[in-house]
Length: 468
Image 1 (cartoon, rainbow, N blue to C red):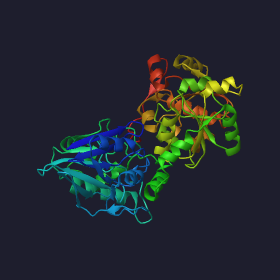
Image 2: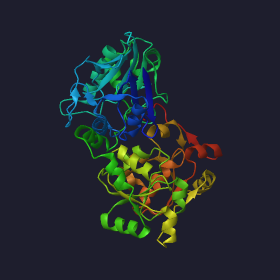
Image 3: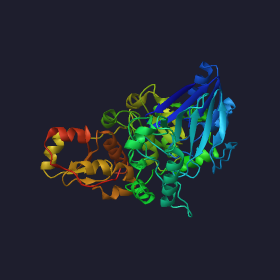
């Protein structure tokens, strides 16, 4: 029996490939399905099941396309109601996979259809449990995403408490826990960088699995400090329930090469967003006016989902040579299917064509210290938890996550020095406001990490913060 975790860092997401005696189950696949098909072909095996732990909010799953390509049965747990053909399992239903058995454990709480999959070998030994967004390493799934008029956040948290204690914590201590996400995902608030663990270690270290914890304590702690979910989450849930366009078609359209003139015409005619995915400092030196920076080498897909409000927005891409398809694929992972082409030859071609360029001033932390001493304003765009942990005295926090709601708080007439943790988010922040007429925003290279190293700033922490 083979268990392979296929981890995607950009989404902090784990998919799983399980093979036993020529039969394969894939759990929570990414939208690009070819790697799963290739693995099965290499193993001379058939994909029998595509198992979904729930309707994902933070990415578009590959279940529909993988089922079509392989003939595999899509399986959801109880309460699921997809618009496509799928097997809706009952609690404790068993599925044979070669010499192994997979048992459905219905674990409502994160969502009402949330389910885990218990893997048992041919000798009847419980080997692993695939916990989706029910149980993470160091945390549990947030219970606020599936609220309805008759089901509150606290109701969901109560269901989650019961699911953990009656379905998961009763499993053998040496069983391996394989979750759907790790640190960096917005589906929880305190996840570990580790991507799997024993149940015994989680019982000993995960705050939500304390043996003496009451349901009331659990509800309070699990719901405390949750930031609002990104706006694209319900749109991804809808796509995962209703189906979606083939990723092959999405990639073909998005990788249409456009000359500078054709690119400019497309931007003018379609009102497309120009998305520049190069490095932050390359963007700062020269970019197409009114384009937005979200670098492919950062938390690209989640930031796209958080900051581009319209999931059907037409997008034109500026990318480093050879990375255009990667950009389109990663956009599609979070449901942004309407990229209509990329700038052939990149920014150099734009320059050679004599087209207009813009730039952003980016300075060192030392220069920022000097300017702050002269009275210039500094703004921190990290998350509240980062800011509260340590920040420059008297510097305001406006998290990038909520820039669309809070941009009016940013002074427009005087210079403002913008920093994040390392320089990625600050450039996104500056680019978004630059496109909206803010001309006096200055990026701080290296962010708070560089600021601390200078020793030139007065720093402080805000006590007792649980906001992530």
